[in-house]
View 1 (spheres, rainbow, N blue to C red):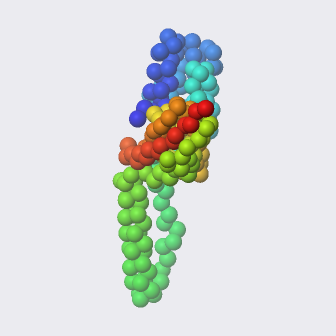
View 2 (view 1 turned 45 degrees about the horizontal axis):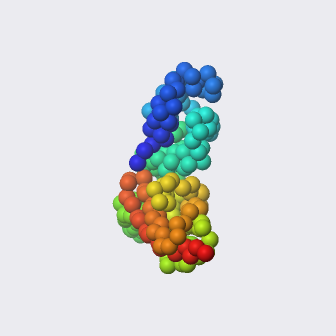
Length: 213
């Protein structure tokens, strides 16, 4: 999977534009542009500023800033101090619940904590290593229609990337996505793919029949 920096750099090189030209047009400092293209966002600024720079750079290169920011959210997270960190390297700790108790209560509480954390770890490990969830809400598989295009709607997790027939689709913070797909006369196979940040994939295919007059 390509990263934000790779997409921006490839688009800039393809257009034959230098970093200095980008800097002059966008007012973004050249060293910031280099760090963005290298995905070293923690060296640029805090989260809100980084997102603004990515948006401006993407629009300058005629790239969808919404799609690029969706990829950014897939790969990076902003901690409580505004620092940008790769997903998986930041896990806030909560040590505020440790308290002195009588011995019996301490043993019972300790056992409960071990059980809770074990279950928590197993659930998240399964989710982290397993294939991402993917639900296709519409259209129904095998649908026949006289419309020349159809809207594909579905749901996954917010930090997954979604592709419809190979084209990346914006995923909302709630995990919803939608995309219009043009149909050819007869049977159409539409491929929907969800990709987790670890590269795990879930693929579904639906068939839509376009009945032309």
